[in-house]
Image 1 (tube, one colour):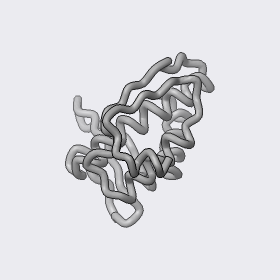
Image 2 (tube, one colour):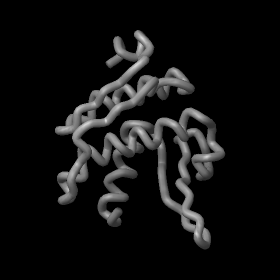
Image 3 (spheres, rainbow, N blue to C red):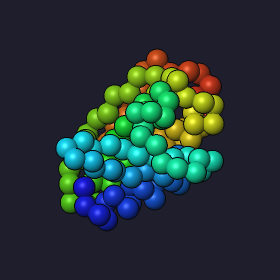
Image 4 (cartoon, rainbow, N blue to C red):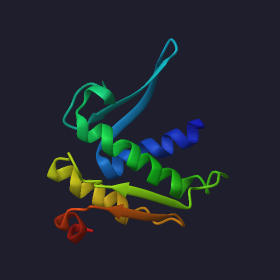
Length: 122
């Protein structure tokens, strides 16, 4: 990922998820660090809680499917997601709904086993 793509993803994740995200490399280990606005310090996503660690890869894939074409890449043509709202705080369920509704791209997204409230919020 180029510096421009990283900045674009960081701006996007802040807008849709209220999440500051940054990579951190320590030796051979690469970590994804993040913080929500109410936190003061970045934390390893693996240590943040199940919801964030589950939603960030979904959000990253949706961002990539929308933006890779703009950066000269080839987006995925189809994404399948099961229970995207599982383990999320209701506030982040709504934010994830915003991600889906704000991610217009040529990629088809199929969601399975979804909570009725989540669908109605879309």
